[in-house]
Image (cartoon, rainbow, N blue to C red; front, side):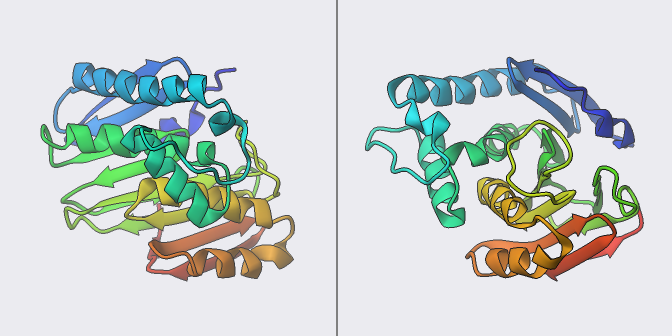
Length: 240
């Protein structure tokens, strides 16, 4: 069932163009230097088709809550989802939103050097200017009070969020927000899910951070549950 992405009302894109592309469950908000809607939709359909066609042959790819091995002839995006989910010890579909964001993003980079793609709270960013990513954490008093500072160094990075209290995505935890940063958006997405699953009370924040910090490629993590906050890694918090 579609749910309005109300947090998009906070998005600012001064000097850039903001547009949406949708294909079934995938709903991307894209910010770039020009309107790339046609190019983005073409890439979205391409990668969705690769994933859905693979699922039709291997249904466990969609349903498994544990890592699985891809077939030798699996598409690159499917193999990448499998490797990211294996690193985080979750099912491959835990990386699907990050996968779509990153693979569509990589395809659009030949048209623009300023690009932000948000897909259900999972974000792919490539920017030459500093960006602030607001952290929405449901009913937590910390919600919308802090933001991540993403340096504008021209390098792409993924910022992915899992929540046990916001949205319809599957989570076995109660974190209001488990935010993970990695230059591999798929890994950030899968790890955010894994961290969120582990945080059921504020006492679990340390456990969640310790899990993420030992996964190669994870740059940092922020965990919010109720009025408690945990942070680790190469992260700068700032005012929204």
